[in-house]
Length: 241
Image (tube, rainbow, N blue to C red):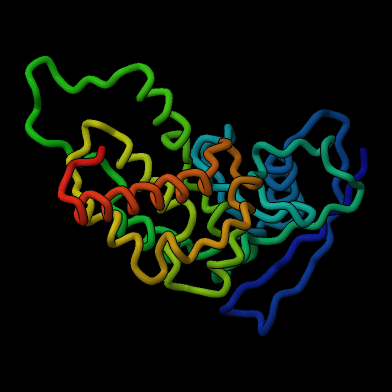
């Protein structure tokens, strides 16, 4: 099969504005988009820049826009694309560092604000244990590989730079669900501040682009329910779990 990759190129140190550059590519074997990009870089243009690591849809490094759809290059089979012309662009809503590499700084900063880790109390005798039913509920959100695809797909992050984004809010929901976690309702109140969970417009693009079917929008809805329960608890002074 013969393809033509039209790839957005931009080096802020050398270019005044982005441009598209076309690369012919031919293969007789099944290939992922990442494998094709690696061959183009190795055989045609060593200056072509993009991120990748695991090549197995685990690290989330190779997120990009593929024929108008956000996804992972390592998970995208060339045979599944419309072809033979394929348009490749970097993730939107983030500054381009070079070619298909974007600055994920705002994404990591938003994640840091929600403290995306288990805050455990005193270790019980026999270690921490959770029920199977709870583990199943947590598994969906624990599957997030922090690829930034949902952050880039969200139209709210394009308009409001202070918005925490789908991944950070879904990650907070994951730890709020965990019975081992001892964080207080203050975390939800922080997330409910300007640029937090109420900024979400439930457009659901985050769900459609997630390569691991995490459904961040569902996590945001769960956080909103927690916020209301916390308000009820404080108003009526009884514990709602």
